[in-house]
Length: 120
Image (tube, rainbow, N blue to C red):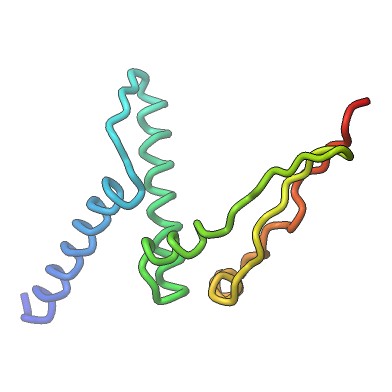
């Protein structure tokens, strides 16, 4: 093996270890006690997909997943009730949030999410 092959292999090992660490910490993977094989497989697949989405977002934005999550977690949904009924409205999207959503090619969530007239 060449020195370059060894270095590339070591770098890949570091990425695999980072993936496992992130699945445990960043994605908050905790022990889940499934008994059926199809549930175990489904759980592992969902965890892998979550990690893949996190890596894609990191690659496209050039930011770490905790940074992305922190910024996007600041988008809140409030429920308001009055005499006319109830509705849900999200907070204003900030410029950093808008930039992230644009970079990820995602539409911002709708401003008004749910309307329910008051029952008389």
